[in-house]
Image (cartoon, rainbow, N blue to C red; front, side):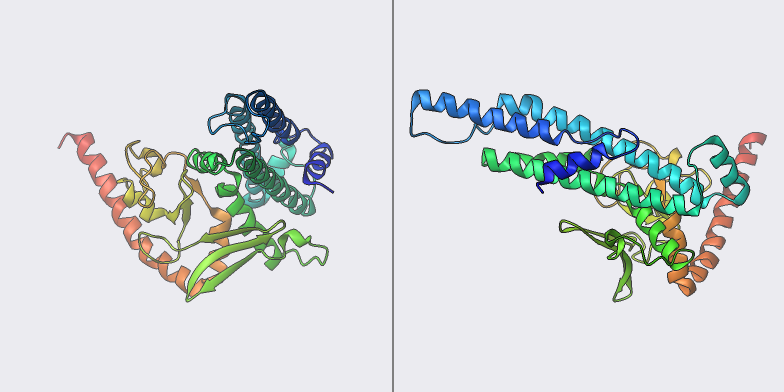
Length: 324
């Protein structure tokens, strides 16, 4: 079965209508572009079978804007649904009942597992659709504009495989697998998902269908140790929470939301990446179980630093209040 048909069947089979990539429509734009240019070229030179030019008004005026809007809608839908799912999983017993009562997700623990699988499927099939249509664009145009667009999408945070919520879902799956769920019916989609250690350095790895592979380095590039109390900046880079606060020139009391917009990511130097940072709580749970001794030691050392910063903060507040 061709991927286009498979993708359409998948999207049409969803209970609720979800944002997706207009794969068939985008292919039609490329086909029309190739046909129109071929007709024009024959009127000048019957032997000229070159594809449409590098800067094509037909493609660039409709193809990339359409794909951009669709990618934004897909990643927005995925992030929102993943956030709600993990809210329920991490909530206390009473909080979980309240969320269910509000109707964010109906069902039991099995429903959480199924929702997680559905979300990863949704992310992956859309990621593959985007990759295939951009490859087709480059093939028709003999260009690398498709790959350039992909890089731009990554810098604008609309590349779904870069979403911190995908990292959280991977950790969520491993946490469930190691604690409550021991089902032999787990789909092949998750079989390659694991926390790996290479020379003591951890990474989250997932080998998925259609040769999609995700490797997330879990070493903080600031302290050069395993990320502790991990947080993902909007650029996608992961750091220890305290290290990120230090890089953003804020205290842990004020938090990352207090960072100035000019503050940059220590790795990619992108500005304004702290306000929308995501606390990776599922990943934190996974690492605390897998690196127990290290985690206990980090809690002990960071407690001292947190108390010191809190004390300095409140002393400063008192001096300001008293006008000293």
